[in-house]
Each structure stands twice: as C-alpha cells, then as structure tokens.
Image (tube, rainbow, N blue to C red):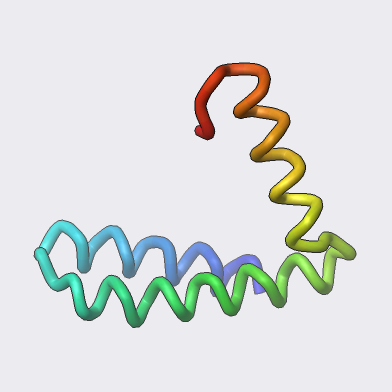
Length: 64
C-alpha cells in the first residue's frame, strides 16, 4: 500500500505540471483512498492526523 501511495503522489505531481487538473482530481481521489487504507492497516485514524495538523498550527501559527 505504501508503494501505491507513492505512485499516486507522483502521478498527481506529473499531472499538475502538465496542467491536467481533471486528472489531478481523479488521482487525488485515488491517493486519498490509498492513504486511508494505509492508515487503517497501520492503526492510524484520520483523527490522529487532524490532531497532528492542529498541533502544528498551534506551534507554527499556520497549518503546514
């Protein structure tokens, strides 16, 4: 699953460079799906990630 996440991220980057925004949207959906599957397999919940984002926002003043 980690390889799929990396693959989708690269595809999004390449599509963005080409300016193919509809494909960026499609690949982003794939990335999010595969990322959530990876989190589930690793015992991570979306709330864990959101808490980390909130921690960073409080620490740095902006969400990274």
